[in-house]
Length: 429
Image (cartoon, rainbow, N blue to C red; front, side, top):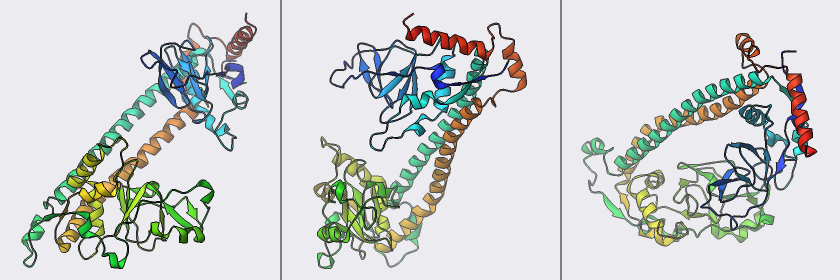
């Protein structure tokens, strides 16, 4: 037979356990990469396995597949695979990658991969020259795909630069210069203010809320009053759905941490200074410990204007500068109170917001299209692998060519060689 032969993954590969090597034990000046389940986690001056080898995530990032050509140390959250000499190494890597081994995770706590489940998967093994031809075609297609992805990411970065340029001009008064020329009853002076001067009057409610509250895991509910966190903030926009809830009773205990529509929430740790406003008709909730809340005086400042201030220009730079001196980067009320905010009249604020949104709406659409295309690109990568190992990547002319290769032999004979080599190795021959 000239075509592939069906076999089990366990016929082709042995998944060997890695060995523990803690961060404290590593000598990072060494030249040998240390692999965890999600790639290189450090370096060491000794190696456990001679390269080349394939590394598979066993715990944590289950089923992630990497390869290393040099000597390496795979730790105990991984399996490593030494490829038989009768198999093409890159073909073996792509084959294991195509199987999406993460789907075999059956654990309920820490994700884990049982190698016996992987061994039981059926695959088709083609002759060695065909393996090489498949690898060549995959790499060609992946190269084209990677070039496309690189161009998309470059466009993403260019849009970020454009976004910052728009915001910088907006808060320097450039976008509303012509608008001001047609106004006769507005003051034309901009001025700097501190946050305390633009907050809601204390008689109407708390000016600035405290930092959010830390909740214990047993206090989380599947439904009820929402607890908002950093995951609810995205590029100045409030994101739903929510994942964490508390009971009505717990909410009344924590009412001091309440947020309501039109409140502004700001991340104070992680990616500091991420900001958005709580939209109208959003259910009131509380904020988690990594957020802080602000209530603005709507007679002095537009909420949208304030949110855009944090996203670019001078205010963004101040936030970065004031936070970077800390050993642990975070935003607190002292830092917030020291920031200078450029303020103009309320009508001009609305005009500025309109000018920003006119320009950034196009930018947002392009960014969304790019993000969707990047997702499609990753799906296409997996589709290429799927076609490759379903025998749909090479045409008849290419198959005829590989059958004339000097080292061509049937897939049945090849499988016999691999099985014999595995048996000899297990018996120490």
